[in-house]
Image 1: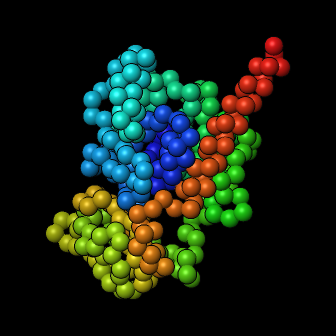
Image 2: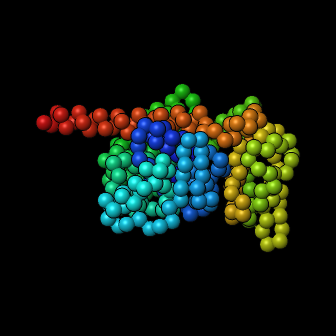
Image 3: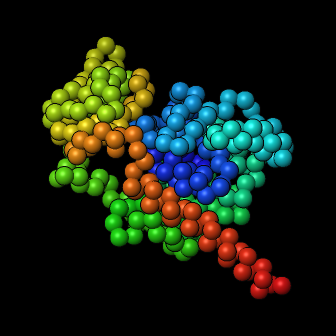
Length: 279
């Protein structure tokens, strides 16, 4: 799997429980906001637990030969752990030669994932065309088609607007007021009032506060001391103020995970039917 954010982690849970052996790839300093439900946080902490998933950062270089690389990873799989490797390219995939690749980066544009990476390649959301860039695309926009599997065409375009929760849409998002270093003063799970300061972004001796635009509970925050750009999303507030939801995989991630599981099994069935017809 390429990407290990909150949606990717929801997908990982579906596949892991179904018996898939997983390797998750991430960039060195992921900018995930919902860190408490993202295996990507292992890039900072070394090891993380999200519900029944345990993600472990692999610091050793994989053997160059595919069988040896898989044997190396088996030690983690046997311990019930999901290996997480820092690799923003496709080099690890080319080494492992997996049966399937899932692009869950959610970059909304081409990221190097293509049909030739594996017998079954699935991508989440916009930026890919099923049958052209990948074998299947899974819809990620909330609504009637969330989790739908497409074997032709593309997912719905990005709306650029977060879904409304208890009447709050853009107000739920925390964005950086300028470029600089992110210094949070609150934690995921804390309740905040509208106008309350969540943290600071500092640059060359000057700091600007990041203020909540609605009342609720902090559901996500970027890892401390990351360098951010002006306007970058650095946090998320849930107006429903449910503490447990801050530490549980979301309904959206679970729905998308079901779509990915369906896509992989569907593609396998089509492959098998094709072989029968050929024979």
